[in-house]
Structures are given as structure tokens and as C-alpha cells.
Image 1 (cartoon, rainbow, N blue to C red):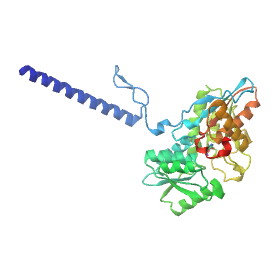
Image 2 (image 1 turned 90 degrees about the vertical axis):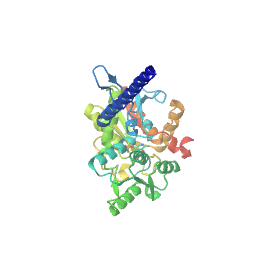
Image 3 (image 1 turned 135 degrees about the vertical axis):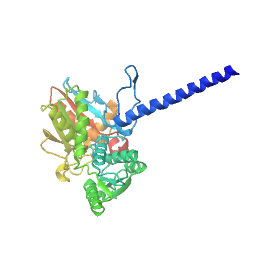
Image 4 (image 1 turned 90 degrees about the horizontal axis):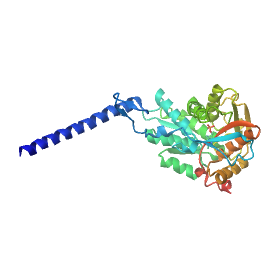
Length: 353
Ligand code: PMP
């Protein structure tokens, strides 16, 4: 009897120590991660090295997208020329706009203009709205989006599924009409809304200055010679362009914009005839070239069939721009971005042929 109860005591003690040590370790390590957002190894004692679990928050998945070399659609270029594209649909919300949307939200939370039940509101033709709705859902921030009533059914369904409030503006007035409607709503109820204003908010281009630009330098090992991209808000071109010019002023920045006010290049803006984005500086790019809708569609189809890349319209437009630059040179590393995948454009039959 005595032996049995001794054994039982030892087992109780061992169980107690195991529980206590489990709780203590979790508490210590949990505190570390919470306070310092450690992403590298945490050394508790000289001999004890603990590798933290992967950061799982959605925000941690934004950026660091792959840089792909395009090999088939570049046939015919000088052998000394390489063309690369950042695969931006790898972002959790599915597009390049996750970068500025998250940075705009973070900046607003930091300065206190968002929070305490205020709704984030903005005018967006799609991807920025999806990004706001994505991070709004993840962070518990209510989101209202104004977009032209002719926005595709896929987009509206995505936004509503993510819990965003959608307000439709006059389709004949395009994104500028949506901007005017947001301004009116904010003027009528300033206490209700935080106007994210992606066209004028410096947190838009700064997202690319602090993430996309450095990634391009790192992924090309500093060899990038040209960066080419079409402009919507111009955030991508302004942010990446500024970073690359500071890194090496010889890097050429090539801006693209649709060749007419009436174009089919979703996400891009004919700046000459539209409300001019406040973040756009016309002296940053070395050149501004025009982009044709049909040409972009053609490159979207070729990217799908020749490279296995099912991308959106502006990716085709950006590729056309990058190739025009690449054709002019004998040596160089030309980089562009592929902002999103093709799924949101499936109902536009004229693209897919
Ligand atoms: N392509 C797509 C699909 C977009 O949604 C956008 C953003 N409107 C762009 C390109 C242009 O990017 P930016 O606003 O940074 O100029």
C-alpha cells in the first residue's frame, strides 16, 4: 500500500511540474511575441534557443511577392536583356493594392483618425476596395466603398462577402463620379467617416517606397536598370520610382497611361482628362508612354498561353510597356509589376477571345 501511494505522489508531482512548466513557458514566450513581434529566434538562456511559430496574421502576408523572369514573351529581345515581373496576386487580398490599403489603415490607426467606430470610406474601382474590405474584416474596422454601378458582378460579390457596405455611383461618371460622391458623403457626415483618399494619401506611395522598391532591388541583386508601370492612383510608380532613383539615379522610370479617356484598362487612369491624383508628381518618371487597350488584351492572352500566367488586364498593359523599353536596349534588367490575377475579369469576354 505504502509503495503504491508513494508512486502516486511522485506521479502527481511530475504532472504538476509538467503543467507548470508548460504554462510558464507559454506565458514567457507569448509575452515576448506580443510585445516585440519577434520574427527571428528568441534566446531565453544561453543554451536554450526557441524558434517562434510563423506569424499568422493576414498583415504579415502582404508583400515579399515573387519576382518572375519572363522567358517566352521576351523571345526576340537582345540576349543581354532580362524582363521581370512582380507577382502581386500573391498578396492575401489578391492584388498589389493590399500594400497601400494596409499602410493607409495603419497610418490612420496610428494618428487616431480611424477607430472608435469610424467607418473607413473611399472611392475604388475594385482592388483597393477588396484590400480595405479584407483588412477591415480582419481588424474589425467597418468599411464603406463607393464604386461606379457598372463594376463587375464578381467585384461586388467579393466586397459584400467580406462585409463591406457598397454604394453605387453614376456609371457614366466612372471613378471620378465615385470620388465626387465620397466627398459629398464625408462633407455631410464628417464624424461618421475616415476618408482614406487613396489618390491624395501619402501612405499610398510610401507603401511602395518601403516595400515594393526595396524588394525589387534585393531580388535583382541591385541589377535593375528600368522600372515600367502604368498609373492608376500613381502610387506604385511614385513609391517604387522614388526608391529606385535614390538607390541609383541612373535607373530609368517609365510611366504608362491609357491612350484615351475611354479605355478598357481597369485600374489605370488617363491622368490628363481625369481628377489628377494629389500624390502624382509629373517630374519623377523619365518618360511617360501611352498604353492601348487592345494591345494589353493581346499580351494578357499571350501571358496565359505562353507563360501559364493567368493575369489581369493591367498586367498585359504593363508587359507591353516593359517590352517597348526592353526592345530599345542591348543590355539591361527591366522590371514591372503584374497587379492582379485574371479571375475578376472572367465576365469580360472580349479579353479572352
Ligand atoms: N492595376 C490594377 C489592376 C489596379 O487595381 C491598380 C490600382 N488602381 C493599378 C494597376 C494601378 O496602381 P496604382 O494605383 O498604384 O497606380
